[in-house]
Length: 161
Image (tube, rainbow, N blue to C red; front, side):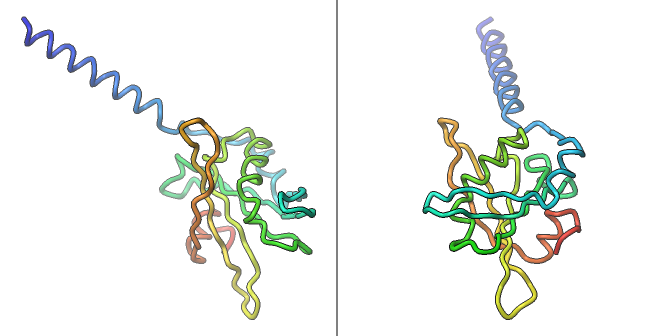
């Protein structure tokens, strides 16, 4: 009898663990096409933490063709505005928060690509930022990665190189 009880407890614990793990997996979501259209060349202007006004242009891409699209099905490409005295990456966390709030999506569900013109070349520098939440639910500092032209194509569903 005690073996049967032990077996039932083990099965119950396994089922509870499996359902808790499934609940932690990101659920798929889709933004309305009108929202995606609205975010084509969307102008952003803000006051920087370091003083002064900064600007960028944001474009939203559907990247469901990517292998990790369940976790981050959309990419926001941010291009440095004219006249900024410092790179917009200094305000990456702030930008992620306001963009996520405006789209109604957690910034952890978006990939952010920061693009910069590079002198003496026709190829821009693209840096990906992804975010995670701390145990208290606050947005943490981003993880950064320089992307190749092929990876940029992948993140923007072949619309940008």
